[in-house]
Amino acid sequence: MYSVHVDDSPVITVAGARHQVSYAVDGSLMNPLEVFYATLASCAAVFAKKACKEMGLPAAGIRIGCKPYAGHGGPLTLSRYRTEVSFPAAFTAEQKARVIEAISHCAVKKIVEVGAEIAFPVVETAAAA
Image (cartoon, rainbow, N blue to C red):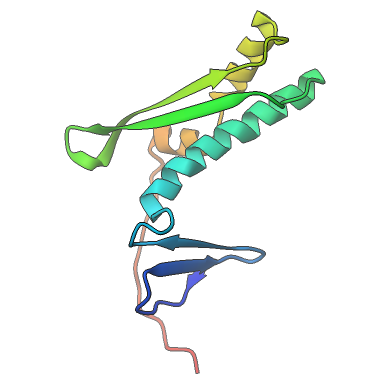
């Protein structure tokens, strides 16, 4: 479970079972939408690292750039999310292709692409004592 204790500061800190992360609504930290986009970029890096590990290659030097493109509905709609990957000179064409293929299997991207049917109920619970 993830929890947030809401206060009047611009910072939002979300706690999970093992970690916590902070966002902000005043530009001092990433806001939740920016973090969503960053999560897609992070997922690409995870899959790039996994592919390199499987091939016995160092992942050092791979650069991943990601850019979201708003849809016709404005900035809260996502029509495209371009991921650009550059490799160190030592990578062969086959190795590059394997890393790019691995990145295409990013779990977060798959959830967004498939459009998982997720229910988002919001319910009131009793206040903690």
